Amino acid sequence: MMAIVKNKVGIVSCSGEELPEGTVSRIATRLVLEKLRPDETVTICLPLFLAGGEDERSFTRVYPTITVDGCEKQCAKVGTSKYSGKPAATLLVTDILKKHPELELASRDELTPEETIVVDLMVEEIVKKVDEILYQQKRMGN
Amino acid sequence: MTDLSNHKKIAIVACAGMDKGLGSVARTSVFKVVEELRSDRVELISLVPLLSDVAPHTALVTSMPIVIVDGCIERCATKLIIKKGGRIKGRVLVSNSARKYGVTPKSASDIGQDGEKLSNAIADEAASLVDKLIGEKKDE
Image (cartoon, rainbow over all chains, first blue to last red; front, side):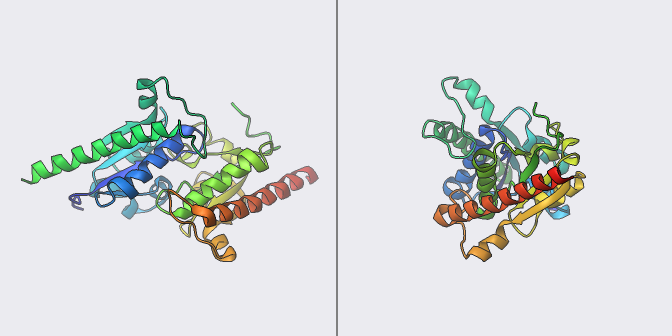
């Protein structure tokens, strides 16, 4: 059996092209991976995950995983649960939009400066979850 | 919902890769085809909902000719569309095109100027494939 990797959290993003929310989930995930928690996070492409073999599908068994979904279809959560295992946490862009009805999304490719506010809020949520998971791991390890 | 099975349009599917700049180029180039170059001739099929079986596209991929833009040598989009019984009629591989044009995207979150050039070239290639397939359809 594969052991959980300590001090690393997996992030699987929806990345859907059909809706602007998919673009937000993708950009927010990349920002966390590249800028905010580069040493503490890893990702796997959802399609590779779904197309791949046992190595790819063991992802949630190796890393506690956060799924970041754009819309209510929750493809990342559904795909991750179906092919790998239950995510440690799930996040949804539309939850942010519900909390902030003043914010609107329209662009699928390049986001406007106003739309990037949604990205910033999503980034905040992801980072919060990453830190929570790492803190829990630390406590359990002590 | 758009009727994707009328054969007047071509379905286009991009790699949804997250961890390489090549995936981001695939995504950007497909947006260019769908939104700018051939908006009246193509329908975008998003790989992730298709594979998670949460969107009603499963039956539709089997009834339309498909153009694939794969990011890297893993060719996930191709593999997954085949798995779903799709009829792939045209393919572009971003990593091959990157070698062909001698450019490399900067990163997954920012493809940079070279990535933009590459995505424009790939979008043109994909648009040509769409035109060819529509032409073939007319001749049938």
